[in-house]
Length: 191
Image (cartoon, rainbow, N blue to C red; front, side, top):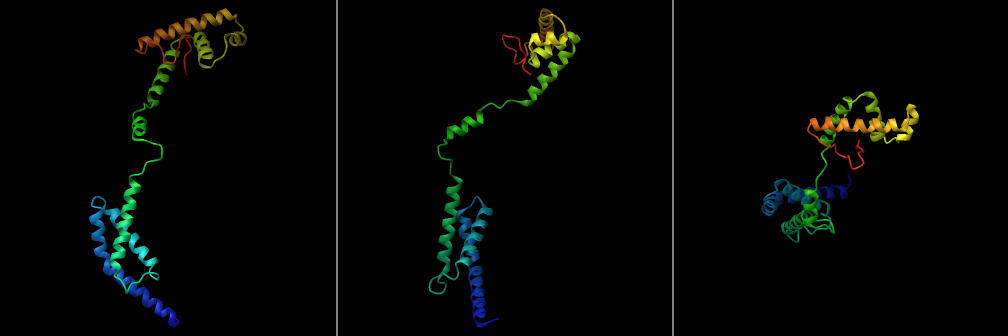
């Protein structure tokens, strides 16, 4: 180790000793500023001491007491934390937050329950009616396409879907649901 390195080590030890000597008074000062946040106060003390350590070569340790510099840095850090905690995004008002919290969120459990009830009601239909209702109203197939694929007249498909929907509404009514959610004037059932 050279003579320069030896002098630098002595300066570092002296810096550490000065910081350790001021640490408790700094902790009391910051704790007084941040009464409600002891963990935040400890963070501020550590940040202040870190900055003092990093700026040690630039500071005048012997000409002026370091305590006032530490207190000023800590005070500024506390003020910065306070400002950060009070910030809002630009253009957003308190009413926007209130509106966001009161907006209704759809309950997916209700949709699952409704689907289970609909499937159970569909199972009560005859296979011909169930197929016609499911393919036309749930899968969106046209009556003409279904009639062609089943090899029956289009009137038969219309009759099966009509009677199937009527029976389905009756079954859902006995289960206390009345008209299914999503059934509009057209009688189409939402999946």
